Image 1 (tube, rainbow, N blue to C red):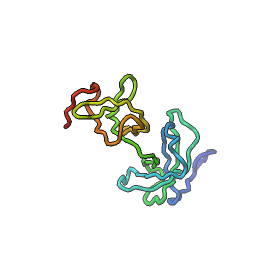
Image 2: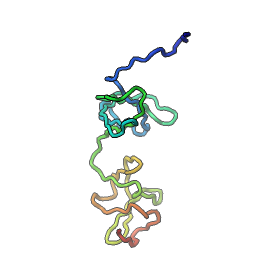
Image 3: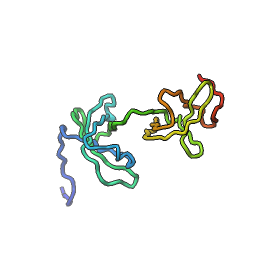
Image 4: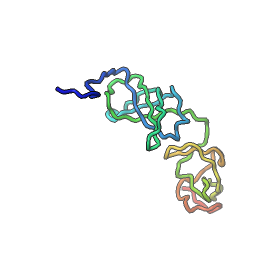
Amino acid sequence: MNIRAGQELYRIYSAGQLYLEAKILESDLSLLKIGQQALVKNVATPDVIYLARLAEINPIVDEHGLITVHLNVNSPRNLLLGMNASAEISVPQKRGIIVPRSAVVLRNNRPVVFSWENGRSKWNYVTTGNENGESIEILEGIEAGSEIIVSNNIQLAHNAPVIKH
């Protein structure tokens, strides 16, 4: 057998030292710190959750705006080298108001959340924070405990009559 320079001959595998290589958006970099806890699920056994810790953040941003991070898996029983997996990195947040993404609409290029008060819609300009595609953080503009309108709000106007279902 002929071997070329740089050709991989073998790979040393240690089941006790597996890590997950994951991609994150560069806009989320400020939320991450070495040592943060993460939850890892692999495709083969999605009901099994593995604990992991953020071990390394690669300082290079790729052409898609993604950064590679390494998560060390604590007890990688039944995981194999090269398996596909996903991870959730726990990011501590202050207590805040979280609403469904559908509750936020744009008016005059500013985010608005409609609240429901005494059968009428109330227009509330809000300042938004972090979001995950499904939910969005409201930093100011609406009080905790307010009843908000999360659907049929695209064409809604301030003080319009609204029937609650």
